[in-house]
Figure 1 (cartoon, one colour):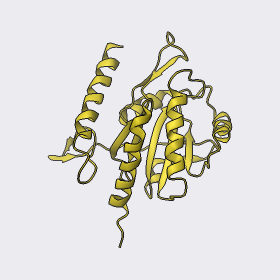
Figure 2: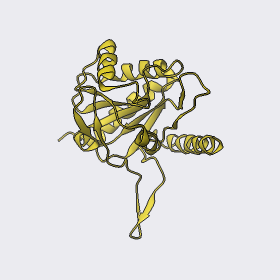
Figure 3: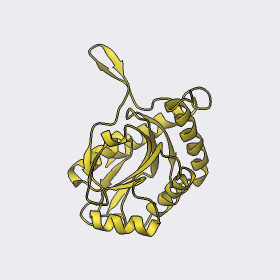
Figure 4: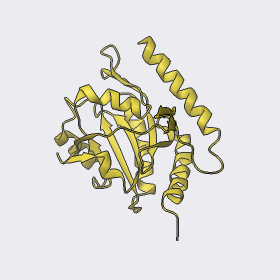
Length: 208
């Protein structure tokens, strides 16, 4: 538990530092660089392949034509998830007609959040599931994946709902780099993320 707390503090500090340089120029690349064959490489989301709310196989490679916004949640969450999903819905509405933007929500409770239940959840949200995927995977891999998106997620039977996780909403570019984020539990941060999405669209899809 102490390690997870320290990890969360370190990641939060990194995000704060990066956000301070985000007002001018291109969006920063978030995450620590790694040395590969003597060259510094940017953090990148590793390959994943899971199933969505329609039980169809989908992967990060399917997202390469788009930029996307991601979060981690579970349907029965009694605490932060409804607030985070409200902000995700605001982002969805802002870019609903922009085919260059996708949304992806990963459940951290795959036992209860089956594809069928995720489909029902999406229906209740009244969203287009071609644009907004709800992803189901094995529990053994979802927490490691969350870390790659700089989201803390783990089981804790002593807290309401049985899971603890942060409510960050993450912006990812077409190459899998994390470029910005908002705090889904803080609605006042959503307009800044929307502005960052528009900035990244201009960067990734320059006008001829």
